Image: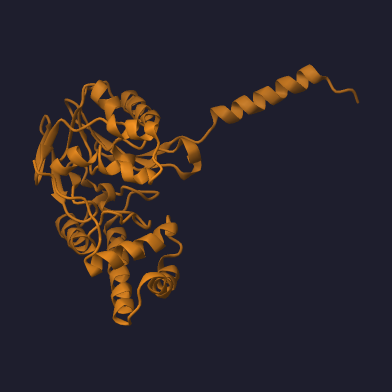
Length: 315
């Protein structure tokens, strides 16, 4: 049979173009009710991922956005998705903490007219502490990217209440993940946007963490919002109180296993080797289990009092 190359080429083009058109989205939207939405990072997107979870709330006179992803392309997509649902102004963006994967799209929303808010340490750390995530061989371009991140224009120490006309959004600064974290509670939808204070069945990045106050923070969230939906900073879907308790259990188990290993005289690689199998047995199916070794090392240093954490702002 003679192959008609022009037709075959055309068929290949159609298949390739269709594949490109159906490329996985950077995130998926979850309708939480009453105008509240979670934007959940899509692992299938691979290189085009948003890198973290975010969300937004549509009120009667405007929109509030919580976090802006790890790149401007994903942030622009989020803005486009919001615009499909409402033409109301983007009034606020709340950065839940300074980490790059939650603030890199700030400029997209600032250019759209939003006021960016965060706990006071975030404004200082955003253009300084974020450089460490590129390692000692950070390039000039990477430094410039960090130094050009869009900063919050309004900061607070303990919290602030934002209003979308009559709809109140309670922003609270709580300890644990970085020393500059916030959650946003929307009573209309009974939703808590947790940032990285909650990782849903996902091992956390503990590079800046203080796990003891973090456990107390999770107790506070569970006590104050027992029936809420909790939007995690990372994890494949919004969670409920049981999921927050599971995450709290991870931090407790991590600390207990390390304390026992320390009491047994272990340190360094020997301590990691003693603790890792315990975590593997109970949490090996969680997302980001590759963080387990660094979680052990960071928490070991925390418990020994040798861990480096960002210093609070002098503002």
